[in-house]
Length: 292
Image 1 (tube, rainbow, N blue to C red):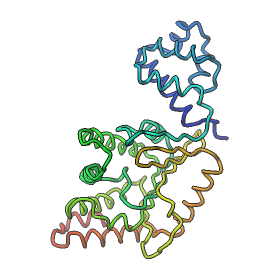
Image 2 (spheres, rainbow, N blue to C red):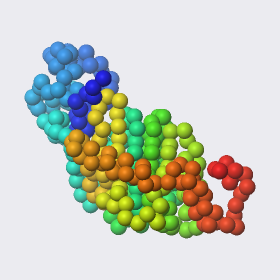
Image 3 (cartoon, rainbow, N blue to C red):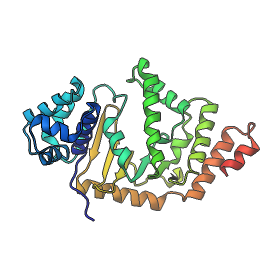
Image 4 (cartoon, rainbow, N blue to C red):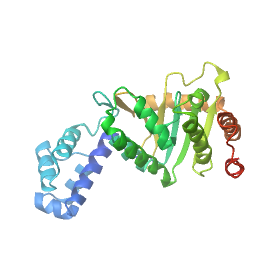
């Protein structure tokens, strides 16, 4: 079955309107009656197919008693739901909750990530998260706990059974984020995560030198009904690439990383060696058996 024509903007708008209707404890039929719309018109609006003016969409949001921030966000999205690609500029630093990433991650069928300099967010321990956030020069200190909670909530989205493959450069595992205990704990956590049936961890060896992923980290998401997208997060912006040629380029990088990276077994052995070196005097035999 061909993929449905859809964009990240359109899906976010539709999800927001559906949440607004549910939050107002109304049915789609009731909303259509209040607005004097037929149900097909409401369905078209929610699914990003147009069919209503911006003023009519404002009336829809008003009926659902949407709060001011969400009202402005959804109203600004409506005229742009057909546009592929989305560069979100966040100001000084990213928001506490990466809404667009979370909404797409929740419905994704698979995830493939490439990470160059640190353990990927979705595989980080709480202690590792704390150290990364403390080291940031832009994240407000008073937001640290809320950001940790938000990142843990993002990790929960991996539990839906989606296939997740993480390519990680070896140097990211040598970087000591926090003290010896935090470092060892993070390595151990990677070994435990690698035992999940839906998680694959592949390490790109540092000895390779120049490699196909030098341009930087990214995450590709695929969907059952929609075309794939690629998310690139920076210090203060998020890029969602959706154009077919852009996706093709990232897929070439993924294939090259797949060819150059260690297989799952050798990747696990490398992480075990790094773990052994990080805490040689503190090995627990039962724990080591659980990750080997």
